[in-house]
Amino acid sequence: MIFFRHKLTRCLLKLSLSLAPLISHSKSIPELKGEVLSVSQARKKWGEKPFSENAFRKAHDLHEKAQLAVSALRNQVLRGKRFTEVREALGAPDGYYFSDYVPAYIIHEGASTAGSKGEVWQLVFILDKERKVEHVTIHKNCCYPTSLK
Image (cartoon, rainbow, N blue to C red; front, side):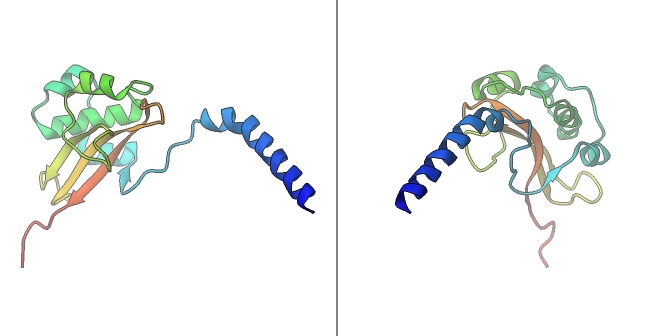
């Protein structure tokens, strides 16, 4: 019985090693924590402007940043780029997504649109094990009550 169990374990290990390249290169979306928006939800909330690194970096108005972020989400911009390249292209991150090593940029704060009072949304670049952008998402960072009663 022990021999059989050992042989089965070796076979399963070989199978997992042979499937590893297929699994690691799959185009599945990584598991995301918290609330995220689809492209259509984000477009409905803020509208959309064509994304450019320069426009995003220089935008001082969060509504404009949000519109650019919708395009970034739709096109999955900067995929395959390293953390340092994202920072160089878009400036220093001002958001936070579970770690300082995940580039996140605030695109919406407060009650500037109906239905989003107190919400904080950010454009997040999810990194893979090699610290390259694997997926781009718009994530709800947190909410604050608009009034204390």
